[in-house]
Amino acid sequence: MASFRNSQGKRIVTAAIQAVQQNKDYLSEVDGLIGDGDHGANMNKGFSICGARIENEDISFSAALDTLGNILMSEIGGSMGPIYGTIFIDMADAAEDEIDEKVFAGMLSNGLCGLKEIIDAQVGDKTLVDVLEPAVRAFEASVKQGGDFTAALMEMKAKAESGKEHTKGLVAKYGRSSRLGERSKGVLDAGAVSCNLILQAFADEILKLI
Image 1 (tube, helix red, strand yellow):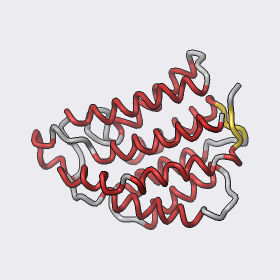
Image 2 (cartoon, rainbow, N blue to C red):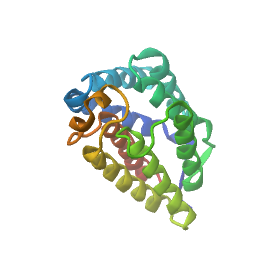
Image 3 (tube, rainbow, N blue to C red):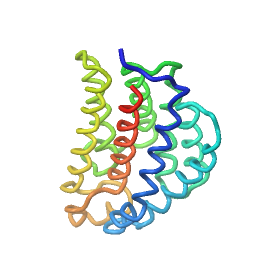
């Protein structure tokens, strides 16, 4: 059974940090079409603070996730800080010393459940939920059907990407963009874009570990 040690997993969070840093301008560009235009800057700020804080630390995957989550909760502005902070902290809470597909499914599920406790958005509302929930459910379904870690990660990656693309045709129900009504159609949701980036980075780095 493929797995990796929690103690090996700091690099997974580092990969997500780098993905956000490399795409900060694009994230703000997408956000600027129907939102405040600061999503990339805010995300980059929080993720970069975390990157600097853990760079020389020998810490685990869960400890790095927890650090990132707490920084996002307390040190960046906007609504996305508490949203992503909750996801990462709750993912960290479900980690074990050895992380296989079943443990990682539990981590993803815990993060999604934590998010659902603080926001009302559902799939179809043009938010990051349109990426996170289908991706998590696809991973869980693959594991339940006997898929190995690699197969489940590939399912997660595919659903995250398609969920992101699907937001282009949706009407925004939350945030500043919701004021635009039908005019919010035709543009990707910035939170969905960043969520996809993060999940893709997580999956790609885990695939190198298992």
